[in-house]
Amino acid sequence: MQSFYPLETITIKEKVIMSQSIIRVNQLHKSYVTGSNSLHVLKGLDIDIKEGEMVSIMGSSGSGKSTLLNILGILDNYDQGEYYLNDILIQKMSERKAAAFRNKYIGFIFQSFNLISFKNAMENVALPLYYKGVSRKKRNAKALELLDRLGLKDWWNHLPSELSGGQKQRIAIARSLISEPKVILADEPTGALDTQTSYEVLEILKEVNSTGITVIIVTHENDIANMTQRIIRLKDGIIESNHTNVPLADKSSHAIYVNP
Image (cartoon, rainbow, N blue to C red; front, top):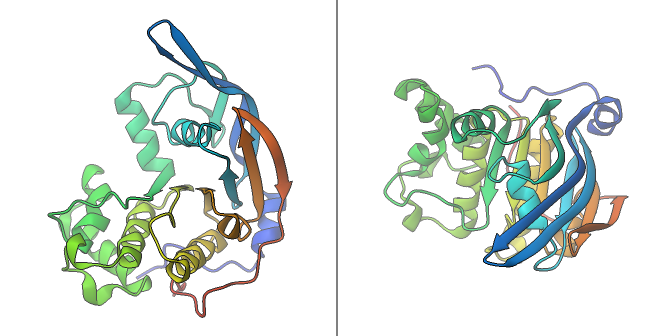
């Protein structure tokens, strides 16, 4: 079967330098109103993320990072400014249209895994293709291939309750990849994992990123952020810093996700 993520002769660093923006945010504002109170969460953010970058977003509770991730994932609207995804203006979409854009461009990974408890690993991974109308045979075959790449082929028929935290997160990563997105949004993907498993999960995301997929990680862990190419820090709804990072050397003993 043809690889979903073919090997490139160009390095990922060169590809990022040459590539165009996959995400552009210009003067983005977002407020939440409760009763007579208004909370201004995002205060004029300007962010440019190139196709093929691996970026971490950091900030304390209340800094606006989760709100920003929800907007980038087309899960929430913004009040003012512009958000371009793959040069398409994303603004006040109907839920139907937003869902279509999410399916086409974005894969999600969550701290709590968000797996369906009564579906096995293969069915959880294949679910996004069900909503795209792909036949059961084709979506299950693609799900099994991804599980194989992530070292979980023998666990395809297990329910989430029968799996470890690291296994659940690898299933969540496989699910995020099955629609072949341009961007992976990971919300605290290592928050529920032990240190060694966290490094293994980051190694998988680095392998995914090496195929050209943009990876954006919201994290509060410095060790995790230091394994990405760029770190954006938010504070009180503004960008406190935005700098290129020299990723730390791999901390896991081996790569789990391997291009065929």
